[in-house]
Image (cartoon, rainbow, N blue to C red; front, side, top):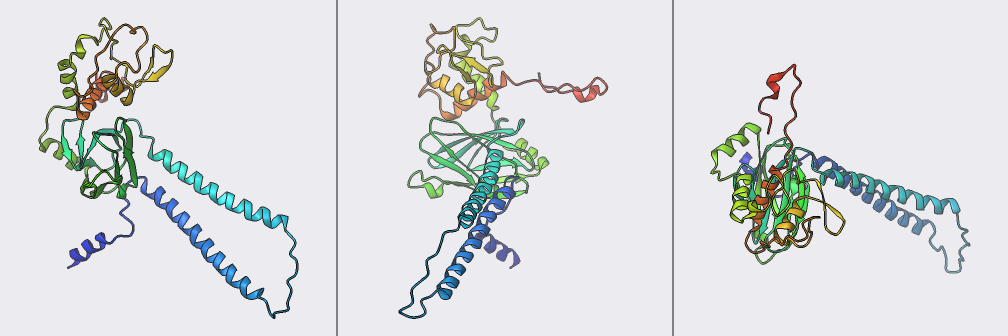
Length: 336
């Protein structure tokens, strides 16, 4: 009976669980705006009621007295709302930038929206549909796109929501603070089965997450799948790592500035790599103006593009920091 009451309580929650590092700041902003609204609503209604009684017309021949303006009163009722509005702006902006600036070293997970499901890929090769398993206390960075229409990735308990846009990559990050299962929704109308595009985020202890990773069916890693496609599509014949091929080397390129034929510079991020695969003539690298790279539009799925990006990123990953000579054991296992 107790469990049943708990389930019923969960079903009729006015405010969802707070299960991420963002939740406290977002909730504080919400309650702050709520308190301001209640305060001024009560104050204004009370003032209207008081003045309507105090200054009501006592008899039909009564004539009101002229009221002279007050500069101090006008300044007061202008400055106070300005300060309140600016405080809401400052607190909201701080929460916004915190939520949309992933920390260095966050776990990378790739999300592809499709009518009407969420397809999720882990770098280790595990794949999920409408479910996402993550460890508690670990920052997780989501790189998201969609195969068809506009979707929106929304986890109320984490206080995170981000549109997933066709042809673009959007990123979102979170750090779960409580073990449990939390609702995942699409918060943008995406067709007649939009309401069924739901899922679960499973937050697990680190050891349980590792056990889940090793216990589920695992295919190739994202990096290995990307490398296989890189070779299958013939990319490896032009993009040689020693820079002797017809195309530029991709080694140590990701995340770095790239000079273009137009004289401008772009950062080689996920969006740039995707565009180079699907629309290679859009941004041509300087000194490679005479090279006509074929487009792979329609030949590679969004999942495949993400795998290729993962492989390109692996060519630029920096080695792990080396420990001091006094503690040589700590330097073992550095990534080469």
